[in-house]
Length: 320
Image (tube, rainbow, N blue to C red; front, side, top):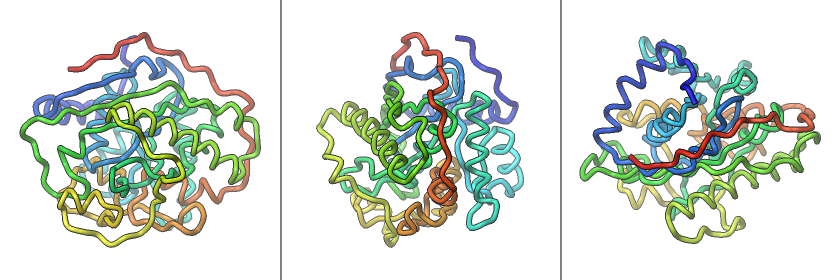
């Protein structure tokens, strides 16, 4: 499949970042055949490090379908950086603002015009002690059920070795292997065509997170814990950057680490909002911020009866 035309600023980011990833990381990529060749879709990805938006975006770009992330609105006001991320088609999330609903509408519009919208359903780097995915927020499910688009589950592992959760300095050597595995579209047929109630959204979200967790178990080659043991995101005080402490369920992301990867900061810090059940007010949930601010509180709508078809890619798994 020929690569879709990308904008100037997205290409600038690729030219700058891709060579660094090629030099400093190794890659074990699988499941690219599940990335749709055409049509809009949502990817639901687990979150393990500030740097994993870059390593995951590398995989997504090489699949021929670049990802568009949600990013906190304040980044769009930074000279140069704001122009780049806006030009690259990233989606602003407005925190504690009357414009909060714009993130959801922008994500829906992006999917409807045929783009890939990447969502971290956990809304933050996992705080599970063993770094398994936590309970997801409902943003990815709401976008998919509203548009009829497929949700492609994606698991990644290895970025936490390059930059430990909430750490400030990367460990570049020896080179770390970035493992990414995409799976087939999550079966959400039983939820489509129904009013998007809390129960429907929760059921669809659990189905999505089950698929992501199953893929991660394959990457890690170990059994995943049962769904009932899945940790729910919540507030917790920030800790030091020790990998063990940072991975614990008592760690929390600081609003701004100051030296964290720009991409991770764009999608993961400082753009939180009231949670879906008015019980989760974490401080770093912008990737799924649409679910926090508007997706879980919006008026119920009815999803399309059937999902929009997506043309599958030919098999092209491989590692570089």
